[in-house]
Amino acid sequence: MIAIADPRLTFARQILGPVDIVSTSEMPPHLLVLADVRDSLHVVKRHTNLDRFHRETYAYATWIPHLSDLAPKMIAADPATRSLLLSLLPGKSADRLPSGSLAERCAHRSAGAALRELHRILPVESGGAVPAYLAGRVRWWAGRAYAADLISKPEHRTLLTRADTLATLTMDGAICHLDYQPRNWLVGQDSVVRVLDFEHARLDARVRDFARLEHRHWRLDPRLREEFFTGYGRAPNEAEHDLLTRFGVIEALTALVRGHERGDSRLAVHGRTLLNQLF
Image (cartoon, rainbow, N blue to C red; front, top):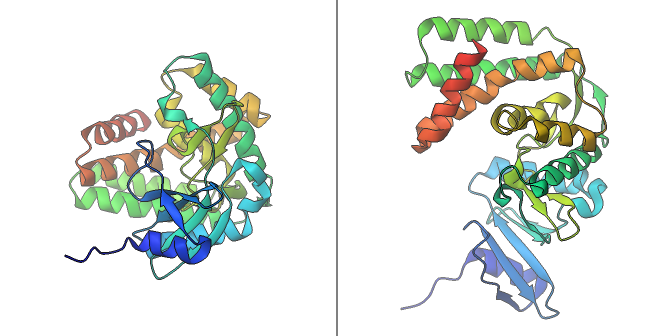
């Protein structure tokens, strides 16, 4: 039987020459860790979605170099296999830190500082494009939830009304990560958080990068919120806090629909609970 070569490995060898696979239990299956002849470590990330591949490639080529050593460096990209060859960052995933520990609080403070650097790359006044886009996201997620019988007709109507209101609001724009949470943070031995996975990155409402943390992670331990904004440099003002609450609708619908689609009851219950609280 002829073995079929892993296309990620073929791509990496075209760029790096001979490489060896580094066995690790900490990486998900779509990531391949490799060592070259100089024992330098690299990672190949393969996308299943071509749009996300192009979005992440663009992010690494334009914005992410400004983060210096706080994010991986893109070495090469291969549209044929939807693969990115990246430098391997040191550290362990922040979502494995003990809950309530000093290490967890320090990680949130460092993650706040890292996000501040991302938001500084291209701060802009949003105009109407970002609010209109976000209103569209609420309508889209609400439509999917209603079609899957996850929300009632009155709830659907309420969500569409909230989308109309969201489209009229003013909000500061920035380059956002848009999946900013501990699973995408690596904590090094120097206790500095470095950031992974920029496949969702785009110009968006700056405050939206706090939403996943606010509505998924900080409710159980408000100290994490305080540490994060200490690292970030300032907490949201009253208008920004109002926006953050409004963005909870997007977080709730995302969790509800994704949890339903993936059979993840914990995520679906979180989405339903959050939606009830926001109503």
